[in-house]
Length: 339
Image: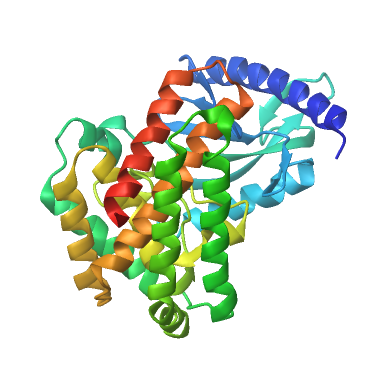
């Protein structure tokens, strides 16, 4: 897709967001906040969130046309209702009338699509509660049980066991190669030691990994189980599933929960990680070895170290210290899990 085509769409979308902010502010008689992420714009009112997907096209994501964005909006609502059934309200059309005025689901013709969500309070957020040291133990138990039931209900997928194991090795190689690039000036010896340990554990656990494929432990899960995506409202809900790429949310159930567990450690809440994994194991009746959890947590830490430095690849001078420190934190976690 030519970049000029996408750039023209992005400019149109920016104007659209400004126009919708004005219209919605007038309708609600209250200010509407705009928030921008790498993949979308958000319009936030006191009670609702409107998400507009950006016109983007990457190897792992296609939001390049109105039609593809419509399909991804539908997928986002459908997939996220699995863990947040009352949060995702639906897909709305951005309508343009004969005078060029834009509304949601109003008169005229459809020119874009958005996802509508109920807005959740920051004080209900797992990450906020974790940072404030206000996360009650019973909330952790409830979340672990919810995730275990979610994974249990998902149909087990049957990838080729050999290809599945090779894909784990490929991911380790890709993350290692990116992190070892000289421009990031990370500790290349440390990265090499972690990678060697991960490959070694993957070889040692190959029989276990293959058995888990046969036991139906590979599922199409959430794909991005981070603390900022978890809320207690008051029951646990999880938002922002990776709707745009089935491959990124197809994984071992233990791999999925390992991301959340690893992030608890990064926040200095080791006790939360221990309780979460213990309760999850009991609820799921999946008594996997600690070494398997450590393997997946280390893999997740390496991936997120890579994603942190990718921010520098896009904008080398913006928040450089933040992303370098974040990557270093993740590498330290990976080291602790496997060495």
